[in-house]
Amino acid sequence: MEYRTLANGIQMPLLGLGVYKMTDPDETVNAITTALTNGYRAIDTASFYKNEEQVGQAVRASNIPREEIFITTKVWNDDQGYDETLRAFETSLKKLDMAYIDVYLTHWPIEGKFVDTYRAIERLYDEKLIRVPGVSNHHQKHLAALEHSANTMPMINQIEMHPYLQQHDLRAYCEERNIAITAWSPLGRGAVLMDERLQEIARAYDKTPAQIILRWHIQQHVIAIPKSVTPSRIKANHTIFDFVLTSEDMEKISLLNQNKRFGVNPEYSDFAKHFK
Ligand SMILES: NC(=O)c1ccc[n+]([C@@H]2O[C@H](COP(=O)([O-])OP(=O)(O)OC[C@H]3O[C@@H](n4cnc5c(N)ncnc54)[C@H](OP(=O)(O)O)[C@@H]3O)[C@@H](O)[C@H]2O)c1
Image (cartoon, helix red, strand yellow):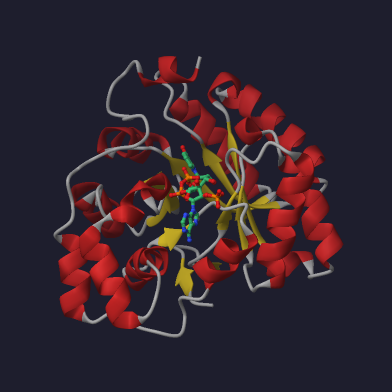
């Protein structure tokens, strides 16, 4: 495993399992169990995914010490605001059945609320109920608003990122402020895997396109959280620590950028409508 050192010195695994759209409880527990057995030490969930109970259950059943596993969860759009976030956190903690959460994120920057939401996350950090405060889907304007009000800036920004959406400007902005990037939909929801140029690079390394993309993320110190319920894929997605992409191949992948999104764009003020 390779790690990213966050602004407070905590080391976060560069690869984790995403569990969005895992709705069947048994399938979810099985996927997380397979991941933990194959070396994963980070799980990315959210109250919105409705599977925090299964995450807690699988972590306990693994018998891996709790402090060796990095758990991320997020406060959903309907629960934002200062008091609401504190309450939502309590609910997540209960569902996970854990004493603390490693990373707690504002899921989306809800206008008029995200600043207060983050104030509550800072409080949870001060009270040592979380180890890392962070946000998700925050663009420069959202982070700039937090810069005015926060004592401790977010240490993570989780954003959509894959070879077709490389987020150069936002990443540079975050890196200047020591905010680590986590890539959601790191495989472009599977769609990027069909790219002929990626397949050609994969053949040269005797790896799969997914392994090439994940290696490309972590080689830039971007945390990647691919989702899979398929045991062979969960295992293969983790087998990326035994090779290194050359700078020429890193550059070739950088040229695949098309600023193409598979998810919602947080830039537009009405983005939250997409979740109703
Ligand atoms: N913060 C946010 O707003 C936000 C938004 C979206 C997602 N996320 C997080 O990011 C995680 C990942 O994103 P995502 O689920 O949207 O997309 P993704 O990880 O890019 O892609 C997942 C899809 O790729 C398939 N897949 C996985 N590994 C594969 C492989 N080696 N070969 C072929 N296909 C493969 C999966 O299929 P199978 O499962 O059938 O194997 C699934 O259909 C989520 O689970 C969630 O934790 C966060």
